[in-house]
Picture (cartoon, rainbow, N blue to C red):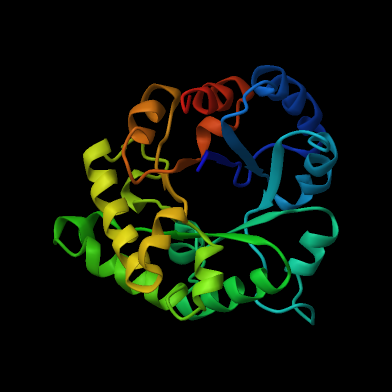
Length: 249
């Protein structure tokens, strides 16, 4: 499968900045055929991003969605709204949603099932905190998050989901899991997929997220079970994000 390079802008960049970003980024990656590209702006920038990247190879994803189709949920955005404006992917269970906003596996599971029903491609994020890694419970945490957020879906939906491993201790800290540490976690996640999907587990993309930069992207993605990256801060500048995309080749 092609590597997937996804950017998560988080609560950064304005809709008015999207056009200039897209022109710079597309000028750098327009001829890259061997990599899939995805950008996840904030909700207010989504329409501008969908328009700016229309007729390009760059897909646009959302950073979150509500667990129901519609209703009296002030301040929330539904998956139907996202699909209606041309969004193709959605991040679910990002560590900031889990640990800052208190989302649990049950809620994330509901969102994931609905995303599939609406034709959105979910990217399910899992990962351990520093104290969990130091206590030797990384695999236990990953199994609990995987089974709670994803393990109950049908094999068909499981195979259509993207998984992202993002060690919480390496997000926005400047720390990065070594390629060996990242590969170990990815191999374990692949084994969890294999428990349900058998050999088809090899077709499910598993991304690495955690202080990915142009300097470490190629080495990370050279690992056998790392199928791409989920990039935070380095995706805010089109030149650095383009450099990461080029590192896949």
